[in-house]
Amino acid sequence: MVSSPHEAMHRIFQEHPGLFSRVSEVLGITISPPVSVTVMPTDLTENRPLERRVDTLLRLDTENDEPLLLAIEAQGKKDTDKPASWAYYLSYLYTKYRLPPLLLVVCQDRATAEWASRPVPIGPRQWPALTLLPLVAGPHNMPVITDVAEARKDLALTTLAAITHAADPDIGAILKTLSTALRDVPEVIADPLVELTAQGLGNRPAAQQWRNLVAVDLSFYKSFMAEEIRDEGRTEGRTEGRTEGIAQGILLLLAQAGVDVSDEARERITTCGDLDTLNRWLLRAPTARSAEDVFAEE
Image (cartoon, rainbow, N blue to C red; front, side, top):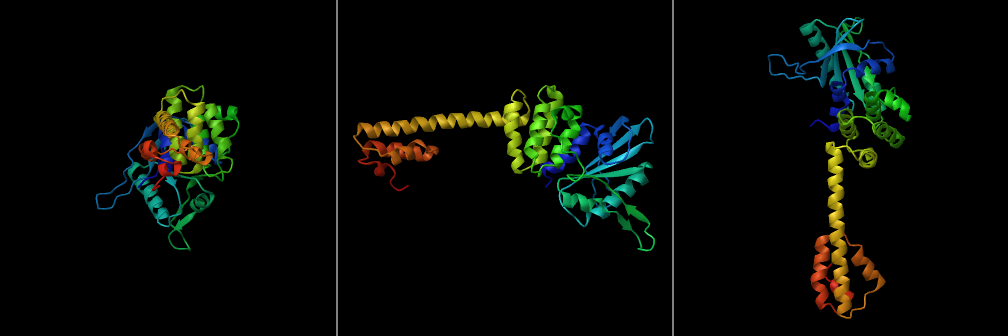
């Protein structure tokens, strides 16, 4: 099953095809900004029962350089089978399109990034016929962006950097910078970046930090996640109101019956957030001779 971080790490290049030219600068090579980009089919299957699919495949046409094919793979962990697959992708692409292919691997942890960065010679040790040399973006080389002005210069790069630093101890400051930078950005640009960030954080603790920031800093956006957060808030508010009302009803019935309610019992009733439990206590309250009778069998 494809994870949300996996999707976000390569889909962001589909949403912002020019992002790669900036990423390449960060990674220490120079690829001119494309003048046109074509999103190409990702199916690299041959006419035999063997299916291989690259995560994202782009054709980049630039003013100064020859066209190239950019294959982007999101890699969550070490996989000894991947280098063979990657070599297949590149050779297949070169055979089919006769354009130079380049492989970019995006990772979220340093160990996986370092593993993916190693050259893989293919062939006899004395004379490798091919050498696989991916370009790797990960927490070891992507910038930690905590300056809002810098973040606003390139929101797509800031988003990808935040995703690759999902496990960074400073992820809270990184995400706060991103949410602040997105405040005055048109929704058509901000919404996809909000969603990609949420996907990229997956089920890490930082995901809840991002949800909180979206709810506060970007509360005026109508993205799927923002609406989901607001719905949760409305549901929680309605539930909280109902539980408070039932708790007060229980205390009122006990008072009418002349039952003495200790501070401990009162706190137990007023802090209970479970509607089913409160309803059971409410049914017992009219006939209770003590607060303990309300809690019977609990």
